[in-house]
Structures are given as structure tokens and as C-alpha cells.
Image (cartoon, rainbow, N blue to C red):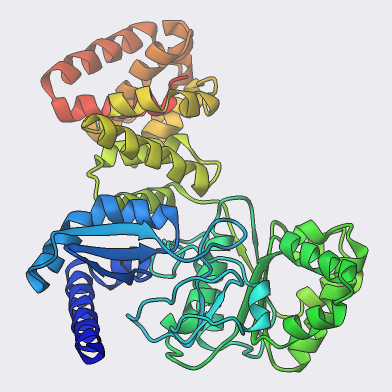
Length: 480
């Protein structure tokens, strides 16, 4: 009986490996690693197979986007299977996410069932004697990998530095690596990507690398708890035994003198031992005025890389990548509209797109410029500002790739005259300026010239749908 059961379990495991392999080949390595790699097999009960995922978010995503395909693949492997039950399995970390820090996990293998302490090892379920360093680990977001990071001019240097550290930790000149930039520019994404690479998915393969990743706030709370529990020595030993220490949002240590002291000594001990430090903050080390001088000096002695504010082109690329991963067609004009309107940070930009996609899925509506403005009216209103003729001229010039000075020049070439007419039309539509006032802004032209431009643009919009779409896009980007 036991032999029969073992045989059935082996057959089931082999079928599960084939299901995962086929799914991986269908969706691609990046998508599989982002959404499906953490699936584990729960077992077969009658005609129902259970597949487990570590978080509710991943469970819901896999159910929605891959549930039918999992059913079909299982049924092709095992005729007994009639249904695949996708559920949350294992325990969660402090923030409700599974703790996926895995030491030396081979590519393509499933992550072990998550455990309360937050650190699994070598792809095997953890027993009660878990590594005590696991208490220091925070959860990694499976979406935050190097493959899903969209690179552009504002962040390419920080990306290259993060890649170098992931490939060769503790390299000369890159220890510590200090990443800084404003909210929502990708610091945490790069931190998670480094950790994912070092814990088994990167070029280091199965070389064991222990990583302690946490926020500065979590570092402080752990330190305070150690003092309260009279276990500071254990805390110090846990921290100083890791290969890589990663601290996110270091600015939260400002004003916390005792915690800064402990961080400083831990920093020195790890660097002296040839271990890697990666830190992020909202400002450069020299601008973190609340930190002790010796801490700031130490942080600045390695590689300091900043992430600049995003450009329009980078925002469009980010939106395109996110829409592609979601598998929802979003018209380019909508992506350009969002990239123009929401410039504060990437998180808000992605949040707006998520909301738009969710609304389209829930109500079965096609995404258009009109529906975008309707669904995101509150977000767009927060970014509204009073439109000026100067801004209209600048946006129109950028759109048609002409010089701003052409708006007031005497040039009459069609590639200049047509955008100038559009700018006059939009100035009449979006501002309260009179025709003579508008004319003066366009090289002291007569009000009849402006009137002719407005009429001409209106006529062209009726005859040329593509031209009308361009003008409408510009209007929506500018209007309040």
C-alpha cells in the first residue's frame, strides 16, 4: 500500500513538473518568474488538484489570468483531474506577503512553502530549526525584478550599478551601493531586483547567498525589540552573519541616535568582512542632514547613484510594459495622454493605469480617451492647472517636432503653419484670451489670422479623423 502511494505521489510530481514546464514555455521566462514561479503543488483529492501560492494577491492574479490554462494542462496530464483549486498556502510575513528570500534556489524551481520566520533555504520546506537570520528578512515583491524594470535616461546609471552588485557583490567601488531619488522612481524596485538575483535567480546560480532585506523602520523596531528582550548580542550576530545587508528608506533613521550607532557598527563589521551593503534613501548621503557625520561619510565612500525624475518617453515605456504584462490593449494615445498628465511619480502613474484596466475588465468596455477621462477624473483633476498660451505653444511644438520659435515666426511652410494654426485653435478653445490677444502671442498677427486658423482647424478635424484625434489628444492633455 505504501509502495503504491509512493508511486502515485511520484507520478503526480512528474505531472506537475510537466504542467509547469509547458506553462513556462507558453508564457515566457519573465512572465513565468514574475507570476507563476511560486506555485507549489498541494495534492490531489478525488478529481481536484490543489495549487498553492504564498499571497492572496498572487492567488487572485493566477486564478484570473492562468486558471483556465492550468485546468486544461492538468486535464491533459491526468484524466482524473476535473478542477484546479488555487489557494493561499503557508504562512505570511509581517506585512501579509510570503517571505520569498531563498538561498541558492535553481532557476525554474518552485519556492518552498513560506514560513513565519521569513527565510526558506534551498527550495526545501523549513523545519522548526529555521535559520535565525530569517527573522531579519522582509518579503520581496515578485513583480520587482530586473526584467520588469523599464530603463531610460533618468535611471540607467542606477540600474547598471544595481546589476553590477547583483552579479558581483562587494566589488571594489560598489560597496556600499547607495541608491537615492524621489518617491516612486524605482529605488525599492531595484532593491528587490538585487535581492531576487542574489537569492538564486541570477547569474550566480546556486551559490548560497544569505540576504537580509528590510526597511530602516523595521531595522529600528528589531533593534528596540532586542534591547527590550535583552537579546542585543543575538541581534548583532544575526545581522553580521549575512552576506548582503539591504536597508530601504534610510532617511527614517534620522534622529534615532542609538539605532544609527548600531547601524554604523554593523556597517563597518560587514564591509570589513567583505560583505555587501545596499542602501536607499530619498536624498544623497551629503543631503541627509539628520544623520551623524561618520554615517554619512561611510555611506558616500562607495557608489552613489541617483534616480532622476522620469521623462515623457520613459513614462510611456513604463505604461506600455505594464499594459503588455496585464494583457489588456490600451491605445497609444491613451498612454501618451496619461504620461503627459501624470508626471509626479511612477506609482501614481501605474495606479492610474491599474484603475483604468480594472474598470475596463469589470464593465467590458474598450479603453478610449473619453473613458479614461471619465474613470480618472479625480486623479486628472488633481493634476489640472491653468492653461497658458505659452504652454499650448510648447506642447504643440513638441507634438509636431518643430521649434518653439516657429510659433511666432514668419515661416509659412505647411509643416510649420499647420501646427501654428492648431495652437491658435487650442488657445481660443482653452483660454479666455481675445482673438487680438492670441494674435499678439503668435508674432503680432492680426485677429483675422487667428479667426481663419480656428475655422481651418475645425474644418480639417471634420474631414480628417487622424488629425482630429491629434488635436483632441492635445486638448485633453492641456485642458483643466
